[in-house]
Image 1: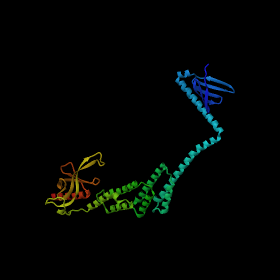
Image 2: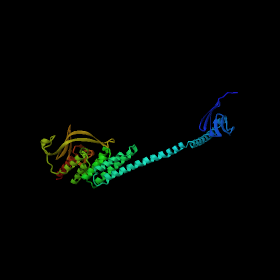
Image 3: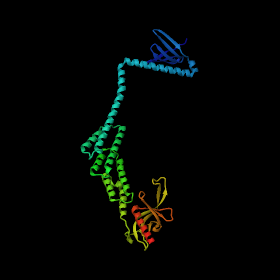
Image 4: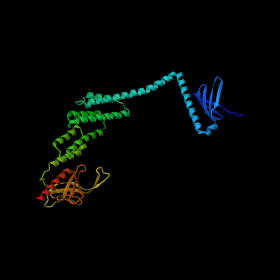
Length: 394
């Protein structure tokens, strides 16, 4: 007769049985239990000292049919789950305080989260209304008391990353709305300038983004002013007003201002031009020539490039001084580049690149010149070419 030890460990309605045959698992309610072990699946039932045990399958049978074994395991798990549920329900009935606490937590936590979220949205909506009243709909600059109220509202705003992004978007929208309202009549008066300054003081907008927005406004007016290569007094006044009203540092738009001034200077050019003294020239000219303008210049080579934003790149062929006479333009510096006005077919000034492209009769490749004053220089060449053509036709 063999000797064996039998032990069992209970965990609620689930019991683990350890015997010489191996480890078994059983579960159920009082009076009935279904189990699975090394000897197969069984049902154990009975009360008051009388028990009945029915073997449902044997270990050997389980090895013969994997499908039957999986079905039995599934059945056991379902029964165990039901048993755990019944046991947990009875335990909660015996401990009502835990049940009440669980219900309170299950309802209270989501409710508290929802209330906090609604309150935060309400605070943000109120902040948006305060900003609109202070900067967008107001007809005058906000007084100190209003600005103080806005700052107090800012202190009560939620600090989480999600809401900070929403607040940032609201402030950016308000700032854009201020600019749109102020620029509606294309003129910024003192009160409107003060409103912009107050908004920039209160609204927490990235300084780089704020400056770029104002420069874009100025650039749009600048392009409109120079597109016909002429700048009227009205357009000049508008640009000056924008520069002052938006408080744009002059150095940020210096290139645009230089081009505007160059166009204004160009507009004053008329024939006949005033000749330069011979001793002022950087290079000698012919006796039959008169010089009218000179400046530093470069002769460039132009070729297509996928890496350049404009689609072209330039290399310097000659660097020196350019002299414009009544017959030609020439650049002197480690050699000379000559352009006779009688050979000029077309002339184009690229303001963005700061270059002058001169197309010659009988040549498919233009001569590219770069100067610090391409508009002014191009206009002088144009006048001299036309004057030469007039002399030739005469």
